[in-house]
Length: 92
Image (cartoon, rainbow, N blue to C red; front, top):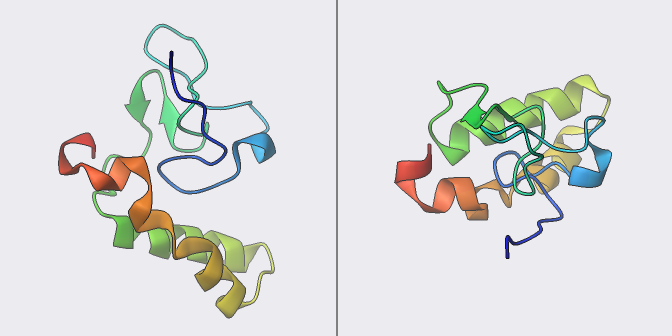
């Protein structure tokens, strides 16, 4: 049975906040691991991001655009290196 995650395992966004209900796998089914902003059709939407640090920088910038203070954005992004996508270098 596939594990169900509470947060996107690429960017850390709570999956319940994803307006599309999650990304999509190659067969069109919903991904239980990644959000729709990161993953579509079985592939990462932004393949040029190849490290947790780059993802942290991107997400921190998006959170600041949404009005979050820098220190809060930093707190929200500090767990990104521990997410599944970044644990195994082959998955990038």
